[in-house]
Image (cartoon, rainbow, N blue to C red; front, side, top):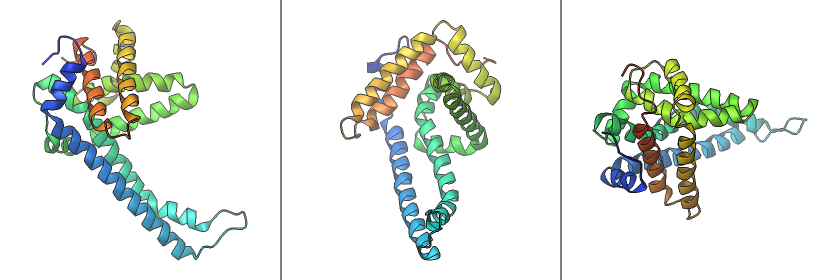
Length: 230
């Protein structure tokens, strides 16, 4: 299903028709954040008990090191789950425009389970390259952030291998003639999210998915991120 031209109204119509999938995804992310916060509080208390408040001569607390060690496996699981669920919000409209079928929340979870390592490795690749890019010169990191919606579309709507899909996303940005248009739409979507964040963050439950849908509409209408084998 291909939108003729991206508009906030058509993005809203899609969100309104499938809001349960987006809201449930965000509520689960919130629940995971609360759960991880509780685990962090418990590991902090446990570290204090185990170390008896011992302090090194340098002034650094043993308790902090023990707490970080205890918390590490929970933090890894938390980061992986939250990252994958967050990507679903972008993947939902990408899948819809590719297939005409919008997954519900359960369908999204089933998709993540069925292709767990593919999505995990894709996310790890994007995160590592983005981090290196920001550390190296800022601009490369920004470029990777810009192509992320294209990369997600490729990864979730085709069986294209991860590395070729990543490289093809750069070609889409620089060789399609629509790169600056994508930047403009992403800035507009970002402004929408930023303004909504000023109102106690509550509107983000709508504007976050709305922005993701809006960007995917642009990609589809300009044929950005279409799998190479298509």
